[in-house]
Length: 147
Image 1 (cartoon, rainbow, N blue to C red):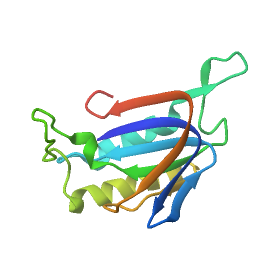
Image 2 (cartoon, rainbow, N blue to C red):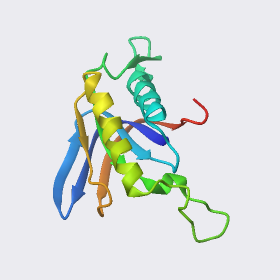
Image 3 (cartoon, rainbow, N blue to C red):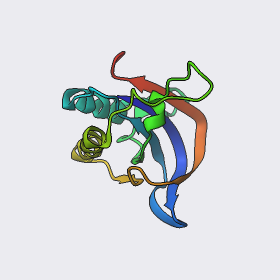
């Protein structure tokens, strides 16, 4: 499982011109599920994302987590995080099929909510327009194979 976590001042996702999800401060999470990913990996990713200390404290050091700043999450499914770019046309065989990816995507969001965070999201498989005002910018790449 892979995630690109961006610290944002705000972010939203639109589908067919309507806002489907948003955050007014916190994380924009692009989440990719690989073929073979498990619930254990999903839970580990949720724990890591929710615990990241990438907000500045009073000394301007990245020391505060999402809970400490009262942030929320906007989670977007992103199978292209598993693109194979050996050729000029990416292949996506490393990404999980929807029957595996959707339950793990939903589990990730549920795990974040269980930790007390407000979570909004896109729509799996939809054509989405994602807008964000990055803060910093701070962008973190996570992969459960290296956590």
